[in-house]
Image 1 (spheres, helix red, strand yellow):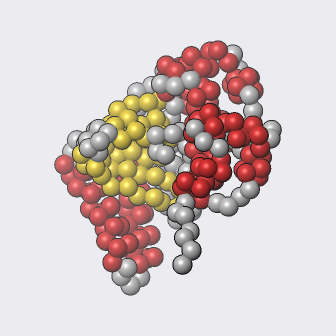
Image 2: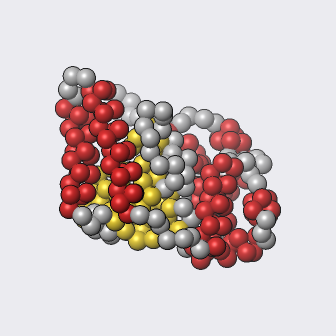
Image 3: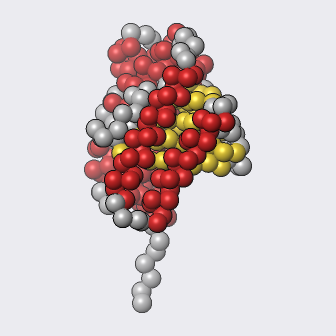
Length: 247
């Protein structure tokens, strides 16, 4: 479900070693390739389209006071060999700790993650100031930040446009230009991702999921799932879980 726009409760760091794809960060869709570092902070919108040959390393990092990661999504293309080796070494060290389950693993994981945050921030300084965002990108980013906080509340597109001081038509056009999808599609993808996640990973009743996602009724939620997933909520949940056979 990475290709759907979503928010996470933890930080996400991806280091690519092969292949190409596209990522939507800060309201802007762009391509990525080999030796790219993609960082999405907890609570910020992200979607990732992976090419068939993409390979790399992924770190899921707790969003707590122990670590000082940037509060804005970042996309770095590291050309310097030393910077590349530093990223790979730290991520490999984290992977070894998790796989080998050695003594003092929590202390080791914390230390390596703190070092990872320092390395990322140093590379951001080396990269220098980013090009000044265009007006469309600034508005798309503001809309994304608003969505991340309110997408489960069932607000209309007119409500979001009003909060940003623009018309729904202008907002949709700007998002299409910057993010590659309309403002309504961005909202829909967030709801799709959260709906599927709740159906697959929880046992909450359909009516509760519908309520928590801002739908006026369970019937409306069912129609939404049928439209976007081609199946009602109950079938989505059933298909995602292995059947229990009698002994």
